[in-house]
Length: 261
Image (cartoon, rainbow, N blue to C red; front, side, top):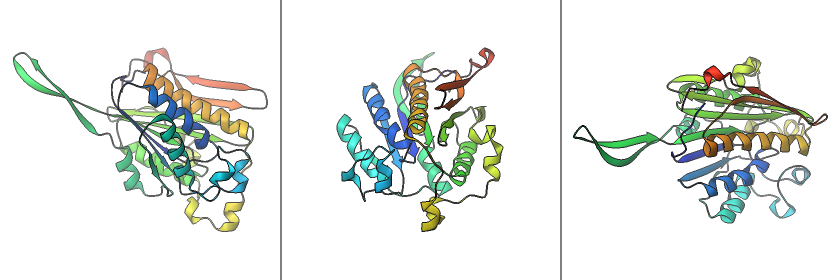
């Protein structure tokens, strides 16, 4: 599948913890090298705790601060980019829809057959989900179903295994299915948003390892690189295991590679 290498890029990432924290510096570095307007928005309502220092991309000086703010301020300053973050949990469908809705951008004036026209196009929007609950994935899925064009990359992992799925909508239809399209049980899960969890529930989490988080982050960054730098994507999903160092991609059949977004 082909992507424009000229459109402005806007990336919205939900979650700045185990996976999102390792994604952030590489996305900032990548966007910094592009010769076109780029924005990177990080969203998370969580704060840095001592337990996060084991496998997340934070240091002792960050304790007590909002995770999204820490990452945005640190890396936007390092690469001279705008500092965009929302220090809240994303749980509002309307608000997320507005954040990822493509924006019409007017380009230069041209002439064809003697008639003047104004060139216009939409920016390239990528939604990255680094969440640890299916209710947030359900929210992203609903937004994905009604916003076009849109790229939605979801990262999920346990202690030693995980997957990254890239959904793509273009021309008011789904080209690549999103994570809930491959795993429909996500839509049936009666989960809770982070803000709905009690202190006891928040203290209990599925075990994860820093290596699994790094594998998921690497796959997400690889997706973004292929989309915004190479302008071409051949992989719909990636499954990995850190115990046997295995990474298995789900490649797009050649006959479907003619689609463009």
